[in-house]
Image (cartoon, rainbow, N blue to C red; front, side, top):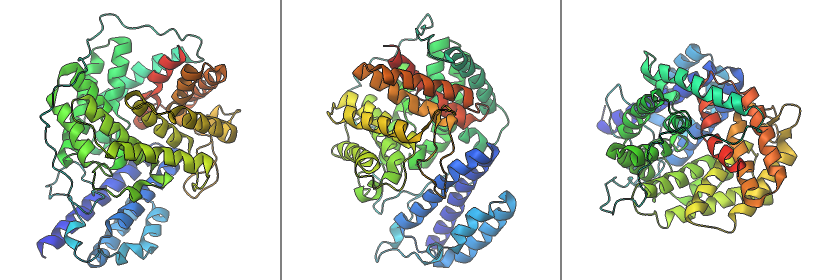
Length: 454
């Protein structure tokens, strides 16, 4: 077996294991969560094949045998058989002269963080600590008194506060316990370190700082740095690392932010913009924007022209969703993730398009996706094979901050009232025992509470 064959086979095995880890994790959350996530895994698989154009003829036999084994193990026949039935799995061929560039994951011995395929044919730039001046931001001073929110009028606000600490400490126990690496990594999704730092600032419970450190050791040290920053586009979480650097002057977190901004999937400057132009890639674009801005916050130079190009693409996704209406579907939480990135970008690079675009999106999903009786948005605006119009309250608190920001910017009380309804439905309807759902509830809702109180 020649070295290139062996290297490609190693990559195929590790990538497949990563996808199964996500599927197993979502099954543990229950059928509803699995149904909502399986489309993302399928789309990642499809993008993996279509973007890398890897010649997999030589590996088809191994691939089919592995899938058969995992079908029995996870009872996911309907998902894997769809992949097996596709001629893409065996017939994709690299362009001439690029075969040796199709795989860009270095050889890693087991056990390892799960490596990912870089979606570019050109090698990713080497991450270096740039000799720039220290960041102008002053490290955060730990407050001596817990801040108090003046938002008692938000429905279920007290329950939101109670849950954030009790469930946060529960999930911290998982990180420090005997759970598997995959379980611990899954518990950090949506940036658990960021969430725990935010909760600490509200409660001043020092146990939460130890929890944040444990989350960093899993995500930052074992996963992101272990893959040289080459995380999947939907696993790009840098804000917790920024907080750690600014607060604790942790050079490892600073370097990790830069590694992810340089080498995360779809983050390299060499990645063709055509690959992320479609609205189905909105999450990857939003996370790339945030990674670039976060790297800037810890002292690295601005990514010119890449940052502006991705901001333009994010506006393009809004255009596909709400103006031209050419998108295959609209998912309210995806609109909100893009809004979060555009709001962060607007703070550094003011853009007159930001407010009207976000307002248009928020108004459209309210008119077309809000289900009053469930106090939740539809998961998707229309029926699709990967998820339909069922209410998704566990995603509410990813969306509510959009309306709080609009209330702060416009003073229109309808946005305050809509925020409060979305907030209430999310607090009452979310299954916080599941770490990912807990994380998505507390990732951005602190900003929403702050904006709503202004």
